[in-house]
Length: 308
Image (spheres, rainbow, N blue to C red):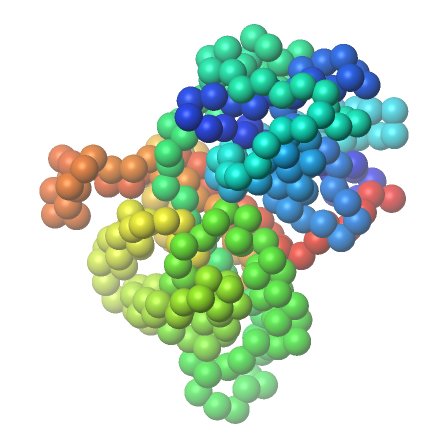
């Protein structure tokens, strides 16, 4: 989106209340947001802007809306996320002189702009305690025909390592708790840095490789949902022959319309699920299972080029 001013923000929430900030420059009440810094990704900008305007560390959740409008400098877009408030405290600053924690239903009446009301409407369309998963396609590993060894051992290329570094920087913004991967070296190495930063190992998932997925697709989908339903937010690294089918199948089951399911190397899908009924079982559909309610695609974890 060359020439477009990019910005990001969030509905920051805690215990049934959302943060709404007053900006003295505009004398309005707004959701926290701001422009991307040079060399910054959209999710990183959302977390930074929330911290600067509210004083709170944010743990990102699902993507809510992309709002587009015109400003004097040109077209502008703002990507909004749901974000759980972590540690911190508000202190008045040059941009924001007051913060109010207001019940979710009242936040839409306090904000000054219809765009913020639309974001809050999306936020309220699903529970706040959704289960999230970051589904990653392995980074670039060069051409298969140029690798003389076992294809399972084909390593990341220099471009792939740059993509892996971008993912290592971006994925922690969702507070992941564990890292899973198809066993191929390029899949594991794409997310190994995330696991190292968490102080744990990459958990191998043979059913989520191409050769493990298709012979028993149903069992592989069940295994993926078991990962979703585990403790904390997982990162899952897999392959281009698997990810589109997982996303499109779960979208169909959840009644979530998706126009297409792209899957570039080094990309990531942010998936959000309604949690199943307590004690759900894969053998008993009456108890329900994690239902996909939101799917957002990040074609790259590398910084967005600046507007020109």
